[in-house]
Length: 212
Ligand code: AMP
Image (cartoon, rainbow, N blue to C red):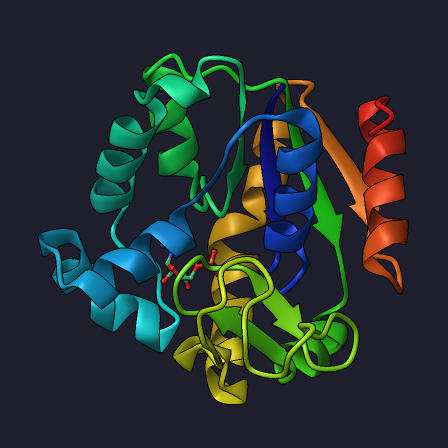
């Protein structure tokens, strides 16, 4: 299964990618998580990306395309992958095609902007493994601590309400046109966000025609 998850920031792509990845036994590649780790470690990519990520702007296409080429060449991607947060622009999607990166389906999670703004204020992210939680709908077992790896949970700088609004604008302008791009290739499927994580996963299973 070679899957792209599309959807606005906060639509639940990361959460659903983690579930699908465990159940299907294929890796999730999250450009956001790769960039946050690079920023934390002060690598050359991290230094280039920091100001963009923290202000909610998109990192230049060539940086992202370089990261993806390196990651997709790793052995664990041979059986399939879930791309979470990439492509985010038409040039990125074209670069994937030009590199011969196969895609079975681009699955879009549809959600209203107002729901996202409410939701992002409760989001907490692991500083080490990138897992996400929500203070009300998906709390960790111990407050402030990641269930997966025990590291500290924080509020992402780009989850501040004003930054979320500008990230949504960027999404509508730069990323939403990818729906038409994949529709034209017969690859687009859409699901509506549901009130619970499990119900959204069930919609995704239906859309993909799989039982997890
Ligand atoms: P995410 O965790 O997917 O919400 O990504 C967080 C931030 O990382 C975004 O707001 C961008 O600044 C940057 N980013 C992640 N993926 C991409 C991408 N494919 N293209 C450009 N910027 C990206």
